[in-house]
Amino acid sequence: MSMYENVQHQFTKAADLMKLDEGVRKILSITNNEILVNFPVKMDDGRIEVFTGYRVQHNNALGPYKGGLRYHPTVDIDAARALATWMTWKTSLAGLPYGGGKGGIQIDPKKYSQTELERITRRFTFALGDNIGPELDIPAPDVNTNAQMMAWIADTYMQTKPTAERSMYKHVVTGKPVGSGGLEGRDRATGFGVVATIRQWAKLRNKNLKGMKYIVQGFGNVGYWAAHFMAKEGAILIAVQDASGTIYNANGIDPEKLNEHATPNLTGVKDFPGTEAIDPKTFFGLQCDIVIPAALGNQITGENAGEIKASLIAEGANGPVDVTGDAVLNEKGIDIIPDILCNSGGVIGSYFEWLQNRQGELWEMDDVINKLEAKLVKSFNQVVACADKYKTDWRTAAYIEAISRIDVAYKQRGIFP
Ligand code: GLU
Image (cartoon, rainbow, N blue to C red):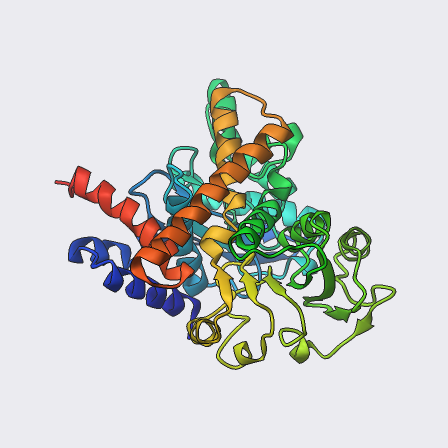
């Protein structure tokens, strides 16, 4: 099943249960705009390459489109549609004045130099032109994109505006470096949010995170920061999987040392001293309490979900569990904190950055973290209450909460003309 089919399936389940208005169902079943750009870039050796970039804008009933840009070989129109749609639900559930968008370029960034990545990013931004904008569609980092790239996007976009107005456009993108209008704490916001929702789960289920064993798939921004905050709870990281390999140590892996090993040269977790390499296929079946998928979509499926022994899946990634995997996990009574709740700390951080830029303020880290946690706790409790009300799983409940807010906006405003 493709990623977009998965989202459609999840949407239909929630829409049926909440008896969603037929008209609103039609609107939300399809994306508003789909932008595809082919653009040329000069490589370091003088050759010209043409790249394909996407930006899909799913819905903007609640505010400007919002969502990341990813650089990955799996980026295509289907993935962009699915990820844009998830952003609509995510921003709505978090109570943010945004809609949903997503995009990216189908490339493996490891194959390009830093100067090439800069030209690719800048030329992509130029090709998108006024299809993005601080009150229209606001990109952010996602898989394989980072603060430096966001700074290039902001700079390129601003260069296309009249000189006197340039500084007004800084919030065309979020996730910028702190020195360029970025928010203190935006780097850790997603991983912090993942752990904040796990803490709520532990409270609800009367469990203590201290000493609990967990595994993480993906050791990028989300995986690393989630592990960083799990360590503060006293939980033990026993295995990590990424594109480079799968590493294991029953006595625990230090997230900080692993980050120093894996991140600087993009080498990944492979060969981290003190761990053994294990068969990637055995990863999800490892004996542990919590699984944090923080990589790509469709990782836990009908094929491998049955092997999972953990009592919680905390979805740091977008769409890591497909529809068939979801059914197996629900059947087994395994809790799932769904992506649109679990990883929403990132876009909530982005919202704070956007507000900070818009109002010319500088927020402090403690303030950011406290506000972030308050929003996540609220969303978590709303999802649990909604699941009780509709006697359904947390994912469907999160969808119902998110869709309800959009439904209300359409009811209040009507359809133009
Ligand atoms: N890419 C992140 C996500 O999937 C963040 C999006 C944003 O901050 O706009 O939620």
